[in-house]
Image 1 (cartoon, one colour):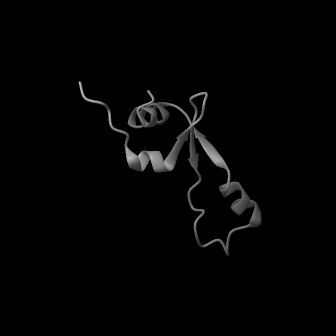
Image 2: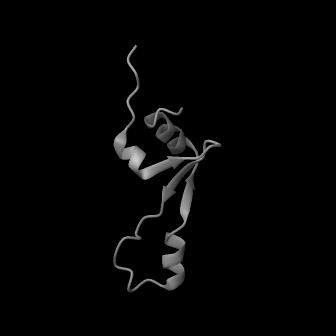
Image 3: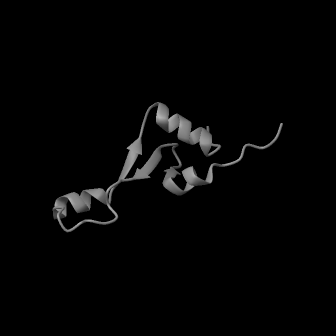
Length: 65
């Protein structure tokens, strides 16, 4: 049976912590910030946790699940 390959696009977008949680960056944070409030911009900098079925699928795509 061949080795499972890592999905490189998924690897660039998600990180798996030591405890197995899946983290992602917030969207809408690259440009067009002039009309957004400072609070909104600061909240976009935070990483978000993924849960449920989508987290399981991402772990499989990364070869961790």
